[in-house]
Image (tube, rainbow, N blue to C red; front, side, top):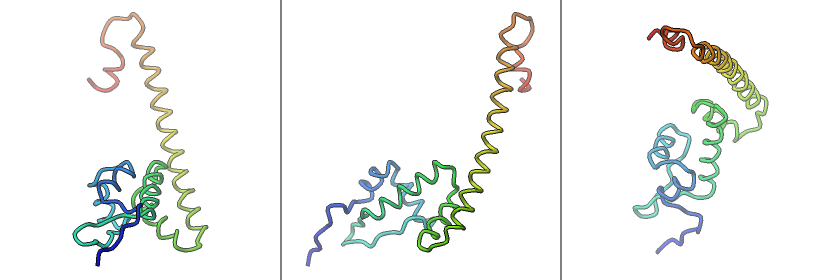
Length: 134
């Protein structure tokens, strides 16, 4: 008996394309336990709309700065009602992002100062190069 496929069922290539990732990324997420490996229909494995939602969640969480371990925790929390734990994870991520933003702002200010110093007509090596130890 031939199983009729749902129109949303996708091969791994189509699934990867729909999620804007490569096939190897899908396999990596499967090895990490973030995405389940779907059962095969004959020799072909297909992914459904639920898997695509999960993949998009993973990608959005990565863009928000969550690590893959943190994403795994969030996915685990999704099956329950522990909003406090999800909030703690998100709050910790916000604090880490704020610290990184402060580092980047300090680096930007330092580089702006060096660009200004390099723009002056003085002789000798550019302060940008000397500050980086060149």
